[in-house]
Length: 125
Image (cartoon, rainbow, N blue to C red):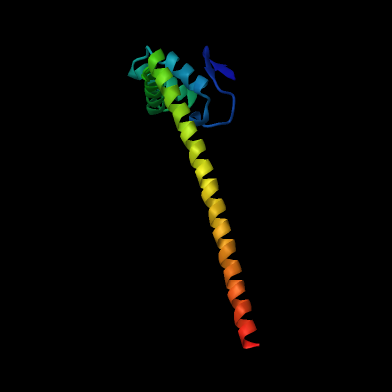
């Protein structure tokens, strides 16, 4: 990274949209108290657009808007997850059983056709 007038700007060749979340958040923090004119000047100096900064600010706000689960909600989610895992395991077991039965049925059908072919050859000969 290199500094531009006391602020952090990524030193990589990436476009600003490719910057890390930390770099974008730094820009959001640095521009928090700027008015429109100051924000435009800030963006010009760093090769940014005010719309990018606004979008990054909204993303940061949205990330913090997610509700935190209570312990009871976390336990309920964990219980549901465990229940889902048990159901998945049972369904996989049932699927394996059915696949095995289908393979057995297919083998019996092949043997039946071979037997019928053998019997028809025997009757002709």
